Image (cartoon, rainbow, N blue to C red; front, side, top):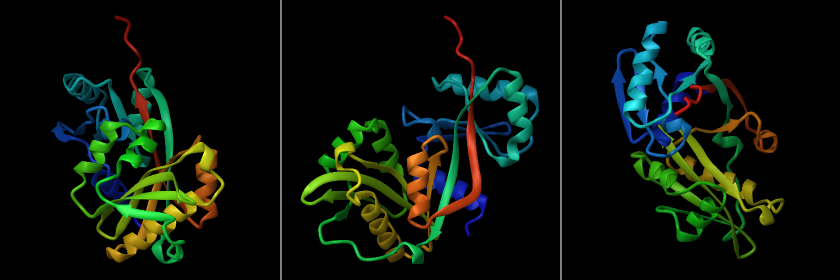
Length: 242
């Protein structure tokens, strides 16, 4: 099973920020509109309350609302931010499985791996809220990467992105069009991702899922993935009245 540190490293490698800035005890991420995961600050050593102001200032200098990633080792930071009125956002759980448990046959033309993503994949993502800024995140990945176009019959129905860090593949942005669900598209995409990752020499596949997304968490459990015993959440600064 990959360690928590390996999973975190894979997050940054396969869904990277536009820029990483070291500021005191912090890693600041410049997201350029690519979402929370590429915009949150994280601590790389113990921090004090006064250090928080440094991170807040740095994020505001980047034009970003202050947001912190809280991992299991960040309990004291979590408490300090709670006292400042920072709210919890989007607790996330990592799911993982050996590729050997996920690889298999995929029906002909059911899934097509490709890089860069096709126009129809961009359209599917856009319809589910994954726009150009997140496509830019995918483009920044420096390691092996691909997308997967899933079909229901001959109709484009879903898409996902996979990148690899060392022997750990991480799948992001799995989306299936609402009218095409319950036809096995998601399962075929996951099998295709596992087959592709195994061919690249990876041994594990992981996904990150917001805890509130019950259907996604059930889906990954049903295909044989399991809770990696690791997760994180965000703390977001209170809105400031203008």
